[in-house]
Length: 130
Image 1 (tube, rainbow, N blue to C red):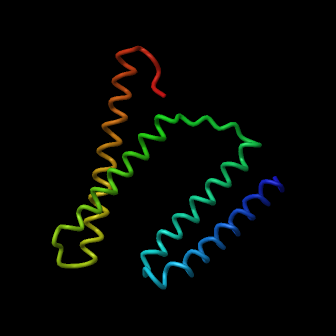
Image 2: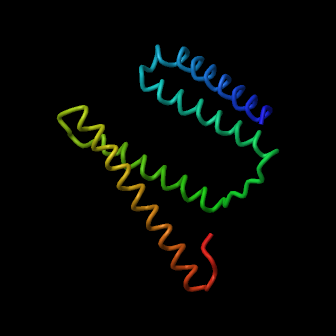
């Protein structure tokens, strides 16, 4: 337990330092939006490092098809939410709320569609869904 805790603490410190460095580098030029991207990058580095470290203790089985379909769904939902920026919405707050709602709607719809196809395919072939 001690070694795992040390790895998590180290990765948290590294991710925090990376987040701070990226914020110092990009926020003065690109504004507060860059802080969100910096935080996302730092969290991704943290998650990747924890995953890499945990492989010594836990055997991970990741279905690459499911991972790829989830990534494509998220990209499609993000594109729909970004495309919603061309809509004229009088309030900045309402714009953010509507973009979030569009993202959730598209993401959930595509996820249900993909999972439904997977369930239907497993019923037709008589196999267990992954």
